[in-house]
Image (cartoon, rainbow, N blue to C red; front, side):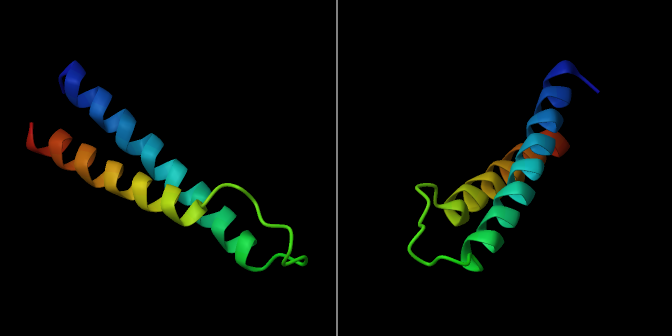
Length: 64
């Protein structure tokens, strides 16, 4: 495995971890006790961006 592929695999793993974390935070956001306590981070958007980064970096790492 080349250094470029190792970097892409590391990016894919970090994106996967971020997607899991964002999914957990989005789940907590939808079930909060105080509906008026709205956070400023849209965790669904963060999760989708992380999943796209995971797909792209995973594809490029496996292709190369």
